[in-house]
Image (cartoon, rainbow over the protein chains, first blue to last red):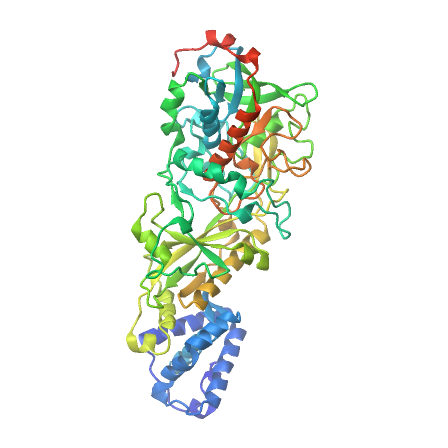
Amino acid sequence: VWALAVPARRRAEPAASVADLSEADRRLAALGGALAAARPAAARALLRDVDRHLATASSPPGETSRTRWARDMLLDTARVRGEFMRGEVVVADGWCLARSEAALCVYLHALDCARC
Amino acid sequence: MLIDANEVEDGALVRTDLCVIGAGAAGITLARALAGPELDVVLVESGGLTREAESDALQEAVNLDARYPIAASRSRVFGGSTSHWGGLCLPLDADDFRPHSWVADSGWPLQRADLEPYYAQALPIIDLPRIYRAADVRVDEEMHPPLLGAADAAFVPLVWLKSPPTRMGTKYRDEVTRSDHLRCYVHATASELIPSRYGNRIERLEVRTLGGRGVRVVARDYVLAAGGIENARLLLLSDSVLDRGIGNQHDLVGRCFMDHLNQVVGAMTLVSSGGSTSFQEEHVMERRLHGVDASQFGFATTAALRAEHRLLACSLNAVPSQEPDPSAAAVEDLLAGPGGGASEGVRTGRRYVLYTVAEQTPNRESRVFLRPERDPLGLRKVAVDLRITPADTRSVRRSLELFGSALARTGHGRVRIRDVDDAAWHVLAGHHMGTTRMADDPGRGVTDRDGKVHGVANLHVAGSSLFPTGGFANPTLTIVALALRQAARLRAGAPRAPELRGGGPETTNRPGGTN
């Protein structure tokens, strides 16, 4: 499942090259893990969202900036508020998150899993 | 004056203008409001001046759902439930009085405007300031904009009022003791209202004591103010003439028993935004205004939101939390926006526990009724069968989801929803409502809009058993306001009967007792 989080061209790369997660990233990854455990199908769908964004990005991020890129893209204020306005809400470990916020958590969880 | 019924001669006859049964918030309010040179009042209280195990044994109920802790929410003592209440108060909202197409049996025969002057009069009785809406609290909205604001059609801010809490038994004991026009009999348990042959008038009240005495009270009018469970019980016990009990021709006495769902349902983390450093509600909390509960603030669903989503009334209340919560820290990172958590470190939010006080659906299967078991006076015990419906809990959950979305839309924070298990929902607020509900149609209510029992000329009911729906507000302020309204109507419509002036045989029976 989590292979989806890392585009094919990067899967063969050694784990050490995957961007290290900060303390804050790992907390979000834990939320993503809780969501994946509770609703695996929803988590897979969120990861596919991230993959689509990665595939269409005009300048794909380098390894070290991937988490920053994901944050920039997925936590855009207008995007998040728009999702709440449209009712695109995902519950992760009880927290009501916008779809993109939840996608970031699941993505970071996948990165964390790939690193281990 | 205060009289211990155990010291009254067995078989004594007490005559009065008005007999009030139950010395709780409603009973004491009514008795104080009406007793005077023009109206002699007798107040009959089953308990003593302090809690006693023997008196409490008289209210033991057969609880059909052990998850519902019924015993903890009842006080058989002079002062009633004000002897143990927490003091939080709010009036009911105008929408609480209206019928709603999505809630069966909803709607009061009164409007908020009918109670408005009595709410104002009720405030000092339970030591509340003369403000009772968030809008009345002066705040600097420029520096502290409302969290969701008047412009938000979904939620309104709540600022709970806080009584000290007033222990009415303590506060008003001296006044009752000194009164020449109010006699309060303690240790006097009302055992049966005896109606006339056709059941359209009450002729007397039978009273018993654990000391083996029996007393009869004959009055022109009677007000039953013994609480949401005992009001129904006494009407049902009064079956020597009418076999279904008094006021029960439509099998409504004891039905539609409601409480308030009162449960921790989630958490909230707030972050600053828009240049303000805090929110109106937090600001109010910090100011610790006299009479405003400074420990919490809350939000209520608006009438428009309830209608749109077919919800029951619900408040969500925030209490500061000191509990460590790693997932809250993660959410605060999200709220920091792009680059926030990773590059700037953890951003500290303000964390709160969210608990609800929420309305239940009036449900005829949720009820109190008589059982064959007997109490120490030989009176049939009451069974309590409180039902919580899926609609009740769904409404809270949906309200919380909508609140979470509203909070997020405005960029102020995030809400965490706690999965409340079925057993936990049964720990309620201890607000017993609905068992003698008021309605203009006798087929839908036990009493009319004035609390007079349908079909009985001189019997009234007071207290939260009258509430057709409960809203989310703690009931004491409304109980006192309703009692004041009833007092005004009794005073206006009830010229004193000449034959009841002066004392009766009981005057020779008055003991030194507890006067």
